[in-house]
Image (cartoon, rainbow, N blue to C red):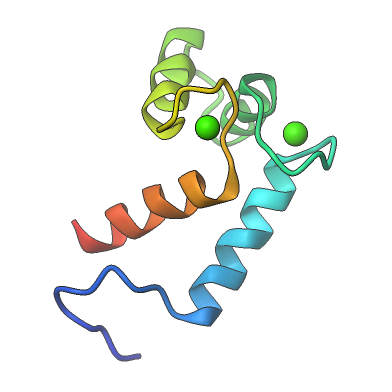
Length: 84
Ligand SMILES: [Ca+2]
Ligand SMILES: [Ca+2]
């Protein structure tokens, strides 16, 4: 696996994986993640996560503050993680 340093570009494979995760969290399939969907998914992974923590993660992911997480915002978080 090649890792390009200093690049925020994700490979098509990485994007495909992230898209799958996104679609899984987006339970009602409306193309965006609401806080209720994020909360539910997070509680499956981390059962003792608090609503405050979920809210904090949600608002830091919702870059344009429109109350929903769009795929590009979700993608941005992943590319930030991968480059940190
Ligand atoms: Ca949704
Ligand atoms: Ca948003």
